[in-house]
Length: 219
Image 1 (cartoon, rainbow, N blue to C red):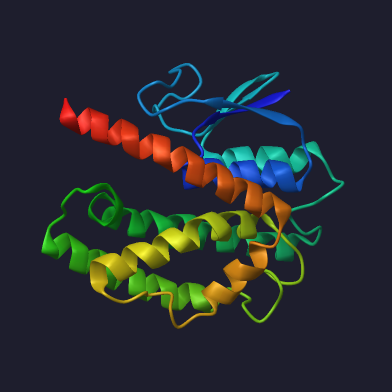
Image 2 (cartoon, one colour):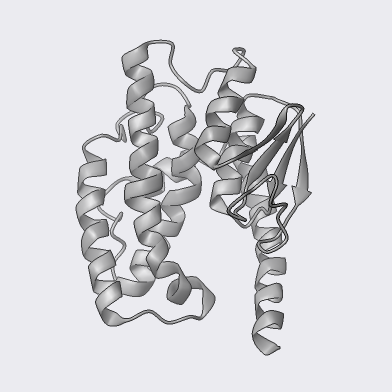
């Protein structure tokens, strides 16, 4: 039995969880907060990490690739090598060029922190540039982000795009994804039972996460 360790408020936890659910692979969940991770399983102290019968895997992209190899019944990567590479390309854009950049805005946008105006402006400028590049690769004219089938790229898009949209709107006054049909895409994806489950668990866990953060700030 696989065990996904982390918490449902994490978008990176949720993209792995979504992949496991979409592929119909049985797994357990273990609630692990930041600061409570097992250093032997997550050397950098990050979540999520995936406990397997062979040992643990850290880094969500490595987990996704591993999960994909466990079952061919519901593939999340195309069989064609070029098409598979294009899915991975989208994943890099979503994870590295969009979400990781937008993450600089999260402390102030979502958690009551403060970033400098210079950092905010630089982040929004870079994010705007990267979104324009992403728009050239994403298939918003198709049912899914990479084309006609649900793939690993959708697992990342579903959990990352709402955060990027909200953070840019809060911090810059404009949703930098607003000119793309992201809302329509997310509405379609929200009809999937797996996405509904992930979103429900995320909302419930965020209540606990915010309470923990408030308690920590009060000490």
